[in-house]
Image 1: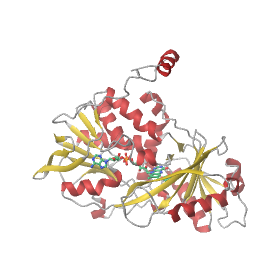
Image 2: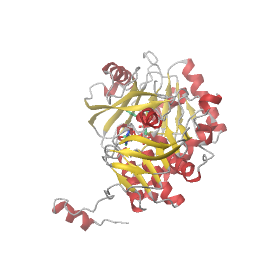
Image 3: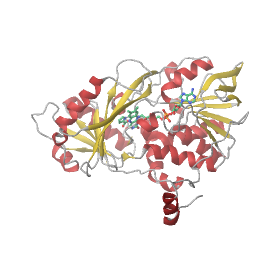
Image 4: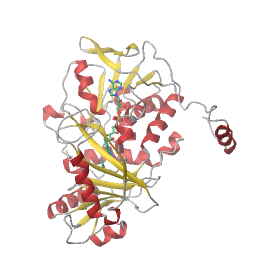
Length: 416
Ligand code: FAD
Ligand code: PYC
């Protein structure tokens, strides 16, 4: 493990950063691996790390068509919480929240997890009923969540307007104090460095262009850097899952849509927590650099373009300005989009596929960043043992034929 002293930092700064050691290697792909993971986002890299760390499977390649974290991992608004309605979901997301807490120490890389609290606002009686139902269900499942009056919500987040004449009046809020944010790139980099140190090959600029089968089983992938054989293939490609599954010869119950976010100019610390308004599909926090990080809903049409409709962010910003009038004269700096893969019940798919040796981790839609460590952890287990981890078992693909759906449309919170 490389450790840096103040002298190392100074020497590298004064020599034009020429002598920094690489955080991970950049190997050429080998002809075959025991496990190949497609997708170098947080979930794919976490899967590779746990395969090596917890299952002793180090003959692993992660294939990424672009750069690490360049997909939704590096484009998301980093909200972490586990206040989902159904016990299966609360258990899965809470598994992740527990891993987040000491992830920086485990990876020896600061992922800047900050449990500053996530507050979800109610603007109508319908919202009050839904959010209170979540509070009760979470507490039954051993997950913290509490109901706040409008005044208590304002005490927790002073910039919030609780003016009852507002277009979106605040009638109360559900607060998960253990929720918060983390640094998105750092999560990808931390897992990449730790996986690389255990022998995993991380191969960027390597796009999978075809999936090869021998009858019912997977045997390898064609890539822009040549053919790679494997008997175990994990697809962790978020918005491109349907494209990859089509290469393997089957269809998925997924729609890919753009989801966008934006950041303001940086200002001094002013916003102490995360606030989500599910009714208006706007959410906001402040990054450690000082920018307000603001997100909107999804576009209402299927697309692979990494940008979204202007009217969608306009709507989100109108709501943000009404809820937090002090931000009405802030300037916005950057806007971008990611492609999210949405299932009919708004819950992820983790487990086996119709092709032997091909495993799926997808359908996280608008809300998978929070699950990154837990997702990688249970997916690695599933691949290593060729059977679903108990926490992943309810999230199998066959729920769309058995009808055992896990409807998390309300908890997913972002419009889709
Ligand atoms: P990704 O990070 O997208 O990684 C998949 C990788 O696969 C990509 O890097 C891609 O380049 C690669 N790939 C695709 N096709 C191929 C191929 N053929 N060959 C090789 N590689 C390929 N979630 C939350 O929990 N909280 C939030 O606040 C939140 N906010 C969001 C805001 C926005 C604007 C967006 C877009 C998403 C948000 N999400 C949020 C969702 C979250 O970002 C995702 O669920 C999560 O990051 C998915 O991680 P991943 O590793 O599965 O996917
Ligand atoms: O899942 O919490 C979430 C989320 C917030 C913004 C986008 N997704």
